[in-house]
Image (cartoon, rainbow, N blue to C red; front, side, top):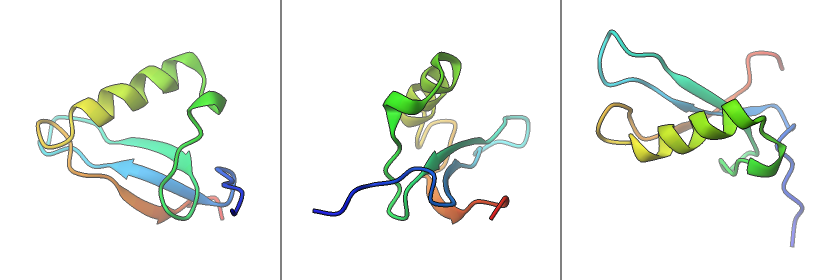
Length: 69
């Protein structure tokens, strides 16, 4: 089984469905797995919020190459 690495240069991005809302971005591996244990408490809470709001306020997430890589 391959080891998942959230620092591999990818991000999971939740785009807003409405113009006045913000996007959420989280570090992930190449297939979109987020290491929730490595997130700060505010980022962890934002991640849970983003997952709960998929289809309501946020689009389904996309895995992207992180702009820093």
